[in-house]
Length: 266
Image (cartoon, rainbow, N blue to C red):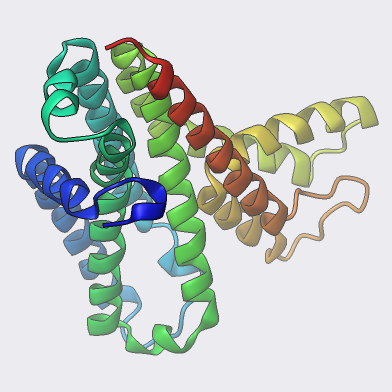
C-alpha cells in the first residue's frame, strides 16, 4: 500500500486484472499474429544481422494494431464512466486515483508491454546480433513514447465524454499520421520552399511528430541517411526534440485527465 499517495496497489492490480481479462485477449492474439509476420520478415531478410533501418518498417503493423486497440479500449473506459458502471467500483472498492491508474494500465501500459516483449523475443530468436546495438534500445524508448501518447490522448477524449469520437479519431490517427508525416518530411527535405512556407510546414510536421515520435524518427533516419544531401536552409526537427516534446505532452495530458476525472460528476 502506498500511503503517501493514498492509493492501494493491490486494488489497482485487481481491477486492472479484471478489466484485462475482459478485453485484452483479442489484442494479445492480434499482436502475436502481427509479430509472427514480423518474425517471418526477419528470418528471410535479417537473420544474423545487426540492427538497421530494415527492422523499423515491419513494426508499423504491430503499432497500428496497438493504436486501434487502445482507441477501442479508451472508448470502452469512457462508456464505463458515462454509463455509471465506474460509479459502482468507486462506491465500494476504488478511489478515483486508483481507478485512473488501473485504466491506464489496461489502455496504455499492458498492451505496450505485450507488443515490446513479443518483439524482443522475436529479435532474440532470429536476429540476436541486433541486441548489441544501442540503436535498438533507443528505438524502444521512441516506441513506448508513441504508444503512450496515442493511448493517453484517446483516453483523455473518451473520459471527456467523447468516447465514440475518441475511438474514431484514434483509428484514423493510427492510419493517417504515418502517411502525413511521410509527405511532410519529404516536402521539407527535398523541397525548395520559401521561408514562410517552410516555417508553416515545419510547425505542422512538429505537431504530427510529437504525436508519433517513433514514426517520425524512422522517416528522419531514412531521409538523412539517404545519398541525397539535405538542403541546408530546410533542416528537419531533431528526433530528440520531438521525443522531449512528446514526453512533456504526455505529462500535460495526464494532468488534464486527472483534473477532469477528479471534477467529473459521476
